[in-house]
Length: 163
Image 1 (cartoon, rainbow, N blue to C red):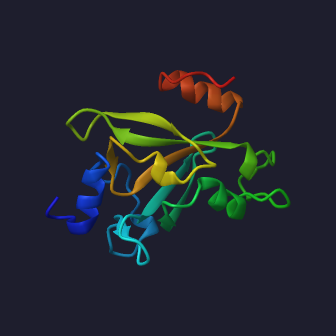
Image 2: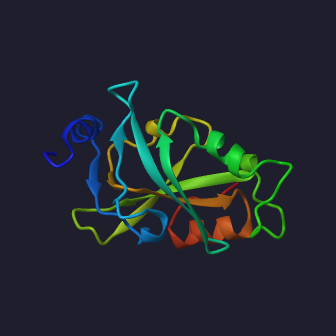
């Protein structure tokens, strides 16, 4: 907690502990290790760095500052609008309102084992960030809801299958 100061105190109140970054994200930042910081306009809100992993396509994105009071849908609308597709989405199926997300968090006391937890894309992200051990750069797996890749992901991680 001492290392994180006010951020650590806020996280502790939510039952959240911080662990190390899960994946090598050095290509996304210039010499400064990403970590959450308090929002300037509220003592009870944080700004998180997000690593978005698109498992089906082996692609990733990095969002340097994401206000946890926002829903992921707000970010996805910017990144995946209906009228434009990203270069790597050859089928045009990554559209903001078709996406689902899972936060990867540590399981147990070690920094080795992780689990997935489904995150609502329409509710503020901070609602999901409770009572878990999180990496200091949030790792979110983003999939097209109900797709074959989504079903495989759920099977692989022992999660309920999409209906």
